[in-house]
Length: 155
Length: 101
Image (cartoon, rainbow over all chains, first blue to last red; front, side, top):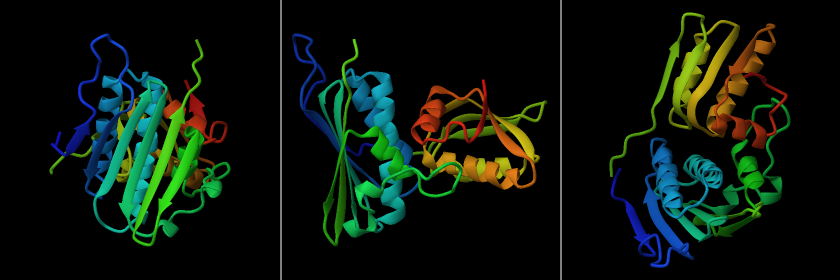
């Protein structure tokens, strides 16, 4: 693993064993295809260390993979910034930022997987289905997607 | 920064089934595409060893299946791992691909 992360938020557990709240990780990857797996593994390790349940962590890793791939394919060349924030083990926010105009992203309302077997971009539709809230920010030079994944406690 | 990309191992067993082990994303999808292209019109792909797949991998599978359907063939997916199951469900493609346990 490359030493690219700038981890903030300190140790993963407080002395009384409670979940840390507001912990976050920020790092960057080069915009090349072989870096997408590094991005999602780094996100996965961070979530696992914060006691985020595996199915939740898997969904966040899938979002990370889709957003980083999308940024790489449609953004301007350059590094891609990734931030993960864990508010609780069932409330995770993932932010992916790239250089390039925010206008290259379709409006969130259009993020839908294509019907049936038609071939087309499924990535953003998958992101939308896995997220409870999505915000797209940016200007002519940079684009940022903020996805919040909050799950209901079922037990 | 040098980080190795993900690995995908693809091999065909004695019954002609393509066995995939590893991660399928934008980096390994071309390898999957190549492996699928070498299979007959009707073929089976075992996905039990796929620890991760995203839309880049799904796209390759859908394209291989769609192009075969015109000639009466099909790509049958066998033993999807939890990661594959989740993606098929989220992508709304369950029922459009042939999946066997």
